[in-house]
View 1: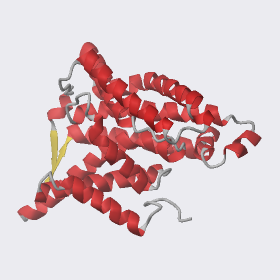
View 2 (view 1 turned 30 degrees about the vertical axis):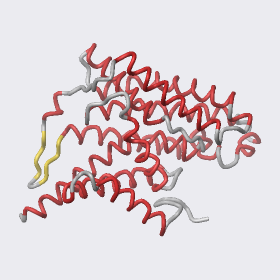
View 3 (view 1 turned 90 degrees about the horizontal axis):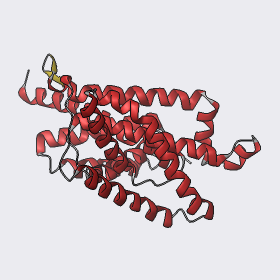
Length: 293
């Protein structure tokens, strides 16, 4: 096979696996930002907190980080409920969520990052499961399990979430709460309880994404800053409230970024990826899976 073609194929496959990590990182934000209209810019920071918790528990108990991520998800669900309760009481119910609420989530970022430095120090942390050093080879294409396993878990979790949102009454209520809260009240459903539940799920997904992140790369307390622009771009490009669109956008974003880095260097990849985002939105402002007004 031509070396350039082989390089391109590997770049695409690696980009798809990277997109799986992006999907894990953006899944919770697609709920909080896309469905609830809560601009939770602290989402990546909470994902990094999940990564540190996973490292601490996984190291102490000798467990696989992805298994630990599933086990700590209920804990992060409770954290999400607590954050939303504070946000609703002091900002949302007063109609001050636009600016003051945004400042609140900036504060959450600061608290999380400083708390992680105080608890774990500023050093990078990582956890290598046994499969992290295994690479499957299919012809000319390499499939590193360090990337493949977290990507597979992310797509599986998002797939189950999509089924639940579409086929359960609670899931349909989550999808509708930001669009017509009054209609939910007429059906004897408390919109605040629905939003509290949904926000808790979004933070549980952030904690799980931390387990995927720590398999792929080392993390430090400020690692979330790398993902803020990417996850918001992915959710917007996917169509805001569309989880299938988010997954598609994450995979495409990963491919564009990785192929660019392969052929032109890593310094070009963010610029090209975000430029591609702007190009998509210029021709389809509602996103890939969004509906035109």
